[in-house]
Length: 321
Ligand code: C5P
Image 1 (cartoon, rainbow, N blue to C red):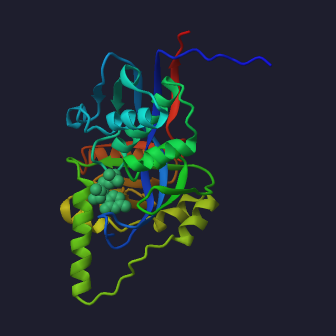
Image 2 (tube, rainbow, N blue to C red):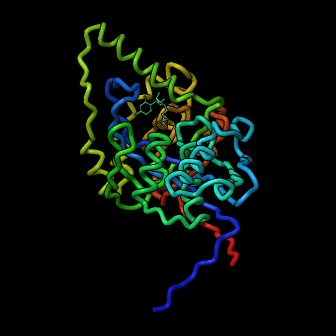
Image 3 (tube, protein in one colour):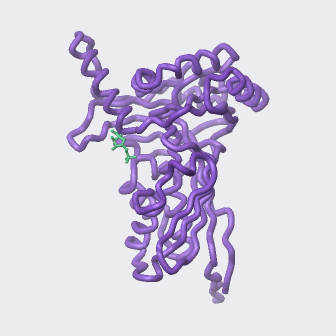
């Protein structure tokens, strides 16, 4: 039997998608501070790229969208991902030092899982660079310890997330969906949006409203996604964090209204916001929506994207024998 010897790469580049939540149902806060979720994650074609290469010591650089807002030390999830993967793979000392280069197109603190994506991309890139051979399941375990959205950034596609979002089941989806994504003028910290969610919920409860602590999956949305018909999917998009994001950024109401007025089939805050995601009828409509939203001055910028797309994927693997 001939065994192929793979050359050790000099550098590995991984592309990782942004996500939007087609449904985000949030329950009451748990004892550990996290909220139980049922969510439908959907990976879209807006992406970051992460390159890792061996280096004398750990280093991290960031270029592109919002680069100034991204930490370049061990508080960066990508840095923590490299350390976590080295530990899981038994890579030690100087061998575990890498230079991480992040090229961002996904805005920061935008509700699009950009930081989680960079963490997921670093896991895949280091696994390849060190030829560590960790399975998808091993990587998912390391990912879950890094953050709630990191496992989905690895998996991509469309998937139902439970627990705090890290327990994933791939979802059956027909066709592709075209989106316009409108970026907010400033980021919204996820922790603060959840805290606002808790306050709003407590106020409603005090006013006598009954609410279920158990979030549940929308079977109507899942059926619509299997039909591949965006006209059916649009009205079923929902996000329990949206009232919290809107109370923190009231201007987002204008953004959502502008998208609806321009024919969006669904208009929703993505995750904890402030990005607003608009479902379009087709690719041309998504482009038109992005142009109109930018022109209307209701967002910092708007781009089009489509989904579902794969999760973190090696795109370049610079060989060296
Ligand atoms: O898991 P991750 O570090 O990405 O979460 C960031 C913050 O978002 C948490 O510290 C928590 O405040 C909030 N969160 C939550 N419930 C979840 C996921 C995140 O409260 N299911």
